[in-house]
Amino acid sequence: MLQAICPKSVNHKRFSVVAHVAQEWIVDEHGTFIKSEDECTSVVHTPDKDDVWVCWECGTAATVKEE
Image 1 (tube, helix red, strand yellow):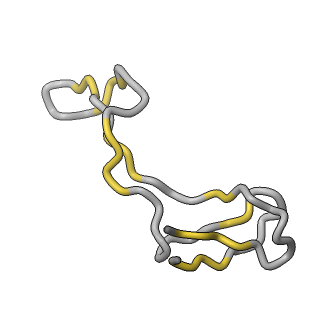
Image 2: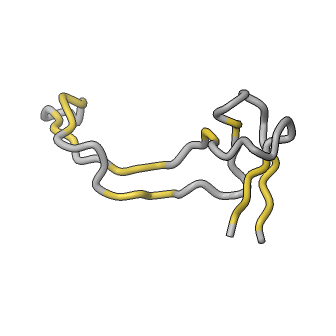
């Protein structure tokens, strides 16, 4: 299990991190995006310890450890 820790305050418990998701797109005959029919069909990559985690409360880079 991952645990992100804000170096400014251990009470900060929300973080911004990138996850990669898949969407179904409507495209033209060249593959150019027109619109998406949904927000997310599946999660391709969930956040892991090697991603950049930023404290959502104060904007400080977090330390992430794996328990």
